[in-house]
Image (cartoon, rainbow, N blue to C red):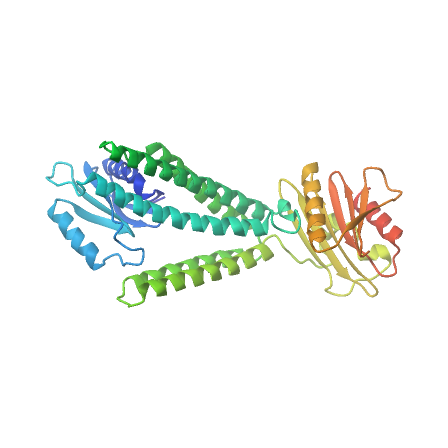
Length: 433
């Protein structure tokens, strides 16, 4: 992204891939963009005259994640590098970037190959481990929301499918990084044992990983814009709240890092874990409960299109403001939940529909398996409905599943309405039409 004389670029890399960053920065300098700062995954450049610069990315494992950006040890090391002909540009945690003119006299920062390899390995392992822990949390949250849920309704939710795709793609990115690191570590130790020089050239792998991150970023921005435009509600408020919470987390962590507190590590760890959990639970709860979920009044035109079975079909009158329904639709399936309280009875049902038979069968199996684990069995009932329509009743006799190859309906019993009347009415309104 370019704004006036500034440019922001997504650049994801691990310490053992530092050569790819050096080469990228040197190419950018030749194009008239000089590195100004590093912020997370983003590199910030400022426009200048094209320059032929030499960059050195230094990995310092001795620097803790909890140290401030200008800790005493870092300041001393920068002075040493300055005397060696290297100007400090910016840094992030264990990564420090230095620069010099191409024709300027300078001394290489690292001369001991074994020490350099060990330092980079240790630093890379810490980043890989941290990323892996983050990945485990993301995968677990997706498991709960999707394949670990009680049914297959997530297949009808664009948001759930989108988040699943996002986490799956992110997983590929992290797995590539993990495998590459293991190969680098093993190969590096073998080369050292043979007295050979270690190569840190991972341009292709680094390019693949950066491309994945760029795709994820672009897709996420497009998704936010799409949901922001189609959502009546507070989607923008949700995004703003999320950004503010993340900003608060970063501000507190950076503030503590740059102070000389005795228990700095404990404070930062506690704040990071606490706020991360708060952000995770608040945002998950808000987003997945509200996005694509709407309450409509009885006279809403949409109701006529989606809810063909209503309380009035059972000769009852709904109470004011008792109607609620939820509608979701994705490229795979559509889902409708309808509930309404009447003067005499209460009607509620779920409709899951898909042009893919496997999706309907998957939803059926998950629903029955979940109830089976709770000790509730389903019994297939014999009916006069067409052969491709199956009816299952749970053993407690208060829930029915009516299923065809492309549609599944879960409906609760209604007091005063016979079993046959309920099943036949549901078939007539929800299947035969």
